[in-house]
Image (cartoon, rainbow over all chains, first blue to last red; front, top):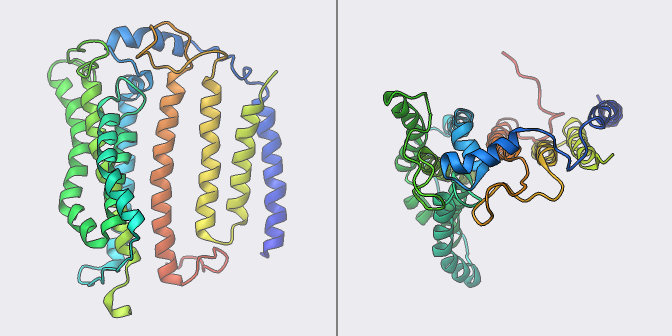
Length: 245
Length: 114
C-alpha cells in the first residue's frame, strides 16, 4: 500500500470516527455543570473520615487503593519488560565503553546547585501527598530526576555508581511489595484488603491519613526506583559495545 | 450548550490516531500515540469541572467549599502513569526493531515469521 492511499484511507476513517465521537459527546452534560454525586460525597466525607486534605490522594490510595495497586504493578511490569527486552539482546558478557561527554561549566554549576533543591522538593512532594498537591507518583519522578541530573553533570561513571542495578531493583521491588504488605497487614487485623485501619492522626499534620501516608511512601520509592532503572537501561542501550567501534 | 472541551479531546484523539495510521517512523508513531492518549486527560478533567469551583484540596479552605470532582483527577493521574510506562516500553521495542532490521519505517519492516 502506498503512503498516499494509506493517508486517504486514514483520513476517511478518522473523519467517520470523528463524526461518531462528536455525535456522542454533544449529549454530555455542559462543560462546568458536572452533576455527579460522587465528588460531593467524597469532598464532604474524606476530610472528616481520613483527615487528609488532598482528596485525589485519598481516592488513589484509600477509596480506590486496589486500582492503584494495579497501576503501580503496571509500571513495575512495564519496566521489568523493558529490562528483559534490552538485556536479552545485550547479553551478559558485552563490555561497554563509557561514553565521554563534555560538560560545559554552566551545566555543571547549575546542576550542582539544583541537586539539593531537587532532592528536597521531591521528598516534600512525596511526604505531603495526603495534604497538598502531589504524592508518591509525582514526587518519585522528581527524585528520579535527581539521578538524571547527576548523570548530566558527572557523566556515566557517577551514574553507574548511583544506580547499581541490584540495589535499584531491590528498592523497586521493596516499594511495590510494601504496597501489597500494607494491604495484607490490614487483613491480619480483621479488616479488608487495603482497608484503612490505622489511626488517622491529626488533621493537616504529616501523621494524618493512616495507611494513605504509608502507601504514598511505598509508591514514591517504587516510582523513583522504576524510573532510575528505566534511565539506566536506556543509557546502557545507547552505548556501543567496544567490539562495534 | 457548551461542549467545546469535549470536542477538543475528540480532535486530539483523531489527530493522534491519524498520525499512528500514516506514520513512516516508529518514534513518530509513538509520539502520535501519546498525543492520542493525552486527549483522555482533557476529557477526564473536563468532565469533572464545575463552574466556579476550586481544586479538591482543603488544606487552606474549609471543607465544603465548592470543588471539582476528585475521582476524575485521580483517574487522570493513573492515565499519566500508564502513558509514561507504555511510552517507555514502546520506545524499547522501537530500539530493538531498529537493531534487528536497521530501519524505523513500519512499511519496510517485514511481517513476523514463525
